[in-house]
Length: 190
Image 1: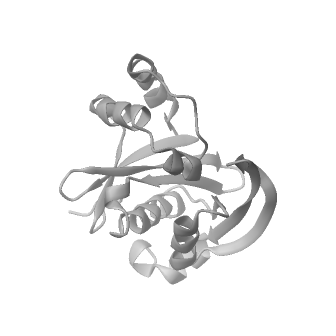
Image 2: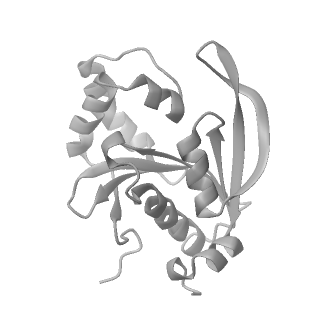
């Protein structure tokens, strides 16, 4: 059986009510270094607030413009999540954000999740360009995007403030044509 959302290492699936426990653990035990690299450090939330806001988050992140996939390995463990956002149907562009839990990093899960997401948006939704941004201090994410063959398209200087200083943002992009050429096994044309 072929499934657009399943690879050799991971499967992308929608968020489910049962995922609330994972989100509660993430929010309450939030690693601030990981939070900084993903987005920013937020004030701590109580368990009741996380649970209370989860249904709204599922609705909000279940729309085409901001769809969040849970990333599961083949053993059924949640290893992280990836969300498509800034989907522009008119111009054929989209962006994404990715988070892999520490104990599941460096196993190929992030790479395959990105490729599965791009396969869907390029090959099923006729998108033409994938954009993403990485904080310049996030060496692991910079390396991931270089390894995947994204083009470094620019640098936005001093746009992110953390640890008492401003940091740069590295802009990456990959076109549908580049994706098909580099990853024929992920495209219908290959």
